[in-house]
Length: 107
Image 1 (cartoon, rainbow, N blue to C red):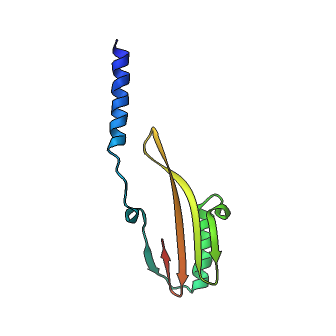
Image 2 (cartoon, rainbow, N blue to C red; image 1 turned 180 degrees about the vertical axis):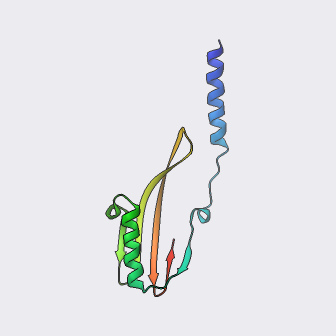
C-alpha cells in the first residue's frame, strides 16, 4: 500500500519543480564586453582562433564564420550543465568575437 503513495508523491514533487520554472528574458541570456589589449586586429583575430582551437574539441565544427578582413568570428557550440547530479541540461550557445585595433568585443 505504501508504494503507490510514494510514487504519487514523487510525481507531484517533480511536477511542482517544473511549474516553478519561468521564462528568462533574452537580454539576461546574453553577455557582451569590450576589452582593451595591446594587439592589432590581425593579432587579436589569430589569437581568438587559437583560443577556440584550444578550448573546443573540434574548433572547425564550432566556427560558423571567420572573416579576417572584418575581424569577426562567429561560433556556435553546445555544452551541458548539471546543477544537480541527476540532472543534465543541454545548453546551445553562439559566441561572437569582433577585433579592432587595440580592442575586441565578445558577445
